[in-house]
Each structure stands twice: as C-alpha cells, then as structure tokens.
Image (tube, rainbow, N blue to C red; front, top):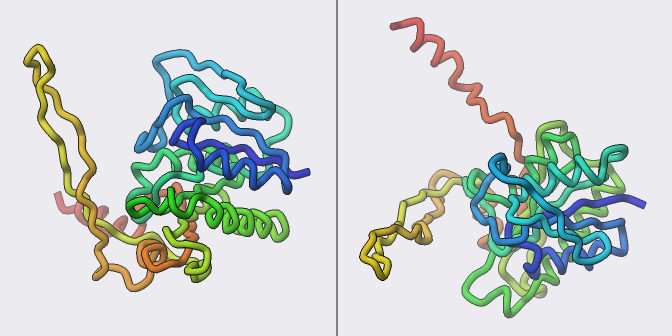
Length: 259
C-alpha cells in the first residue's frame, strides 16, 4: 500500500487536515505530523533554537510541539522513514488559498518545499474561503479534488522532476458550481503593509501586524491560479525551488562588467 505523510500550518486541530486524513485512508497508509499551534505565514522556516517533541494523539497521528510545517516533515522523515520514504507528502488542506506570491509566505507551501528538498514527491493543498464559505461548504469538495489528483499521481507517476512540487488551490464554491481543474501558472498580486499600533496596560507601545491589503494584478495575467480559483475552478501549478532569474543573468554580468 502507498504511504502518505501529511502536515499543515493550521495546527493539528484544524478541520482541513483531519478531513483530508479521513478521505485518504481508503487509498493509502496515512501518517499525520502537524504543528501543535497555528504557524500560518511561517514559510519554509525550521526551528534551530529549541528542542522539538513528538506527542502521539492517535495511531499515525502526531503533533510536534511548537514546530513549523517544515520541522514536521524534516523530523518525520528523519525518525519515521529512515529506511523507506513515503510515496507522497501533502501539506494541507489549508484554511485559505495560497495563490500567486502567497507561496513565498505560506507555511503550507513550506511543508511541501521541505518534502521536495528531501527527494519526496510533494503537494500543497489549500482551500479558498470567502466570508463563511468554509462553514457553509466544508471540505468535501476539496477532499474529492485532492483524492482525484492523488489517485492520478499513484496511477501515472508524479508529473514533475526534482526540486518541484504541486500547488493545488480549491475554489470557495458548492459542488454543483465547481467548474473543473485547470493547469495554470502562478499569478501576481500587490501586497500593501498593514500594522496597528496599540498600548498595553502599562503604556508600552506594540504593533500587531494586520491582514495586508492584497490585490490581484489582473492586467499582468491572462490565465493564472488566481483567475482560475476566483472563478470556480481548482488550480494546479508546478512550483520550482530554483528561484534564479535566468533571463536576467546576462544583463547582470554586463552590469557588473561596466563598473
């Protein structure tokens, strides 16, 4: 039987990871190693300044105390899969989409990145939400789409080469309004900062980072993950870890030689 290792950045209690675990039990042996607390926007960070501790909650279900998604994958592979790696690593289902440059912030994508670095086929899965859409529609559609993609991976092989992972985003729609799966590139967004100044009871100032004002830059993208997911499609995007801007290499060499 195939083996799947799952993590997330919403924490072990999140409904998304529990729904995915239940949905995958029929097609694979599933192990969950998730952070003990929410680690949204922690990107691909790992913990180097304190020890980490597994806490077993159920058969094949663990939380890693105060860890990041990347910690969870790193340590699970080191301790649970020393002799045989899992067939697939999944990070999700995230409560909220990871589209465009969200990938660089995302702890969900960070978990998939770590799996990719360790040589395991990996996928990040996220569910867009609008207002109360998760409460209204739940994770049924997200699980169905995810299982379908995973079955395809097991049947036909992982479609990407090394140092690449799949980024799957699910729309915030009921099943009868779902339009299908699109293979698209990542889009572009603008990110404006938002921090609120407060004072504690002793008068000390502190800042709380608020939700940034994010805008989809439609003029830059004819078809992308943002356009697809906002319009009722699931989007599947190949993401590579090599972030070199190859198209700028020659320009940079000329710039350097002109000093």
